[in-house]
Length: 107
Length: 121
Image 1 (cartoon, one colour):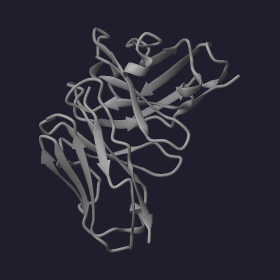
Image 2 (cartoon, each protein chain N blue to C red; image 1 turned 135 degrees about the horizontal axis):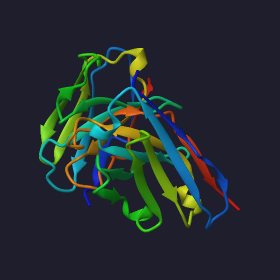
Image 3 (cartoon, chains in turn purple, cyan; image 1 turned 45 degrees about the vertical axis):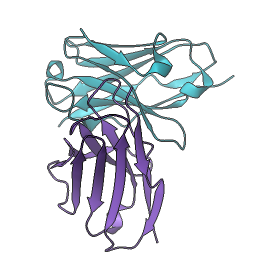
Image 4 (tube, chains in turn yellow, orange; image 1 turned 90 degrees about the vertical axis):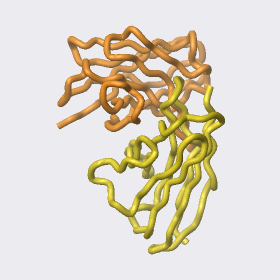
């Protein structure tokens, strides 16, 4: 099975900061990598799929990159509504697995 | 409006069973892979199982293999998760989710609100 490892586990940042979250797969997954945002008590929301494809309605300050085993999610200018937990997920091999999550908190 | 609504959660003793249901509307259910994802209290997301459009392929995370069964009724637009031999560690909010497109490998774009299963003696 493919294992997904995110870093950092959590981070503190200020409004306007540039934030980068990293996700590493235990084997090559091409670009079958998705990013989700989850706010407390809510269902996750798909932000980016296929490593870099921004979903409709998602602000352009979010971007994704990478292929193979190493991927990044970048928020170019953090906004108050972006404070949440972010998860990566591989959809290359079943069972499709999630990373452990990165909590983005207010500094 | 595309909508997924889960039900069937509750409190059950270890070794017991629960059957979760997910009623879908607003899209062609039979055209999509469907997935169950769970989240234990205070923990991250865990992918549980998925099922192909016609039910011919099903996959499970190792921790539930042989105990959980995913199924679907395309005539009724319903997704199910039969959970047997439940363990304390199965306690979680269970989400049903729709896979993007027909191939099932581009993420989960629509989610339900979740139903809570609690396994406790």
